Amino acid sequence: MPTHYFKIGKKNIGRNELFFSIEEGQANLGDFDKAKAIIDIAASTGADAIEFQFAIAKDIYVKNDPGLELYLKREFSLIKIKELLSITKKHGMEFVVAPLSHRLVELLTDAGCSAYNINASNLTNPDIIDAVVDSNLPFFLSIPLATEKEIDWVVKRINNKGKHDYMFLHGQHTMASGKDGVDVAHTSLGYISTLKKRYGVPVGFIDHTPYIWMPAAAVAAGADCVTKHLAISRGEKGPDWHICLEPDEMTQAVSLAKKMKLSIETVVKKLAPGEELDRSIMRKSIVALKTIPVNKKIERKDLAFKRPGTGLEPSMFEEIIGKIAGRNIRPDEQLKISDLWEGK
Image (cartoon, rainbow, N blue to C red; front, side, top):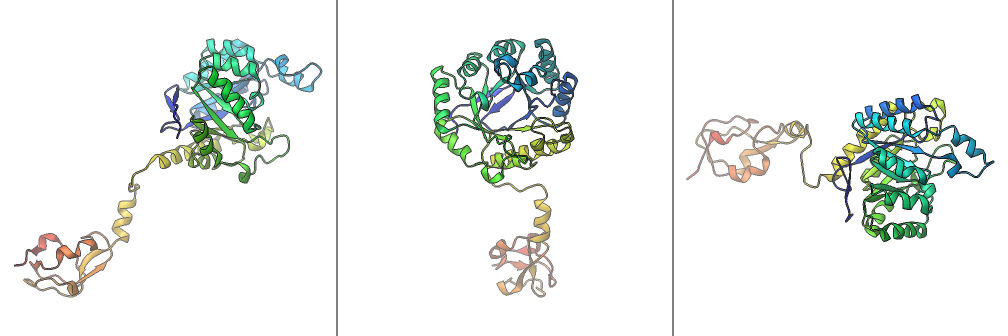
C-alpha cells in the first residue's frame, strides 16, 4: 500500500477517497466559450476536477512544424486562464493543469492552480519536471509511453528534490495508431499494484478506452484516481473524440467509479440495502411439522424449516428442543419464544 498521502483541495489522495478528474484535452480547440461550457458540463457529472492543457506553442514545436500553427490557435491568455480557473472553483471543482510549457508553471501557480499533471509527452523533459516540482503544488506523473527505465529516472529526479506529494497515472496512449482507443486486454490494470509496492505512492489510471465502465474497473484494480476525456459531442470529432465520453455517459462513469471505490473500501461484512427484505423471503423459519399439543415437550421430530424467514432462525432449533408448548401449535405455524415454556 502507498506510504505517502497528500491532499488536493479537500480530497485525501491515496486514502479512502476516489479523485475523478475530467480531461478537457484541448477539446475547446481554442474556443474560449466552449472551454467555459465544458467546465459547466464537467461540474454536472459529479467529478472532482477538470484538467486543461495549456501551452506556449513556440515552446513545443520547432518552426515550420505543422503542429506550431495548430497550437498557436489554441493558446489562451493568462487572463482567460484565470477566468476558467475562477469558474471551476465556483463549481467546487479543482483546477488541474497539464503544462506543456515550463514557462507557464509559475504563472499558473500564482493564479491559484490546484495541481499539475506532468503529461506523458514530458516525462523525460527536465524543464517541465523541475518547474512543476519547484512549484510545491501536488502533481500527477503520467506514465503512458514510458519505459520502466524512464520511470526510474524521473522518480529519482523528483525524490532528489525531496518531493513526495505526487502520484502516478498509469495508462496507455495509442491515439496515433488506432481509432478505438486502447484494447482492454492491453490496459495492464495489474500494474497499478506493482507501482504502489515499488514506489510507495498512490497510483491512478488514465483511461484511453471508449468505455463507461472502465474507470470502475480501474478502481477495482486499486486506482486512487481516474482521469477520463469529456466531449460535448463526439460528433464534433475533436481531439481524441473516439475515446471521449459525452456528458450523460460521463455522469454514469463517475457514479460507477465512486460506487466501486466505496465497495472496495468496505472490508467488513455488511448487508446491502434490501437484503433484509430478501432474507425474510428466502430464508426459512422454525415451524411445526405437525400439531404440537399444549404441554407437549418439543422434540426434533416435531419441527420443520420452511419459508418465509420471518420467524425463528432454523439455527435456533436446539434451543427449542425440550421446551414445553404453551398452547396448541398447528402444522406449518411458526414457533415463537413467547409460546414456549422451560421443560422440567
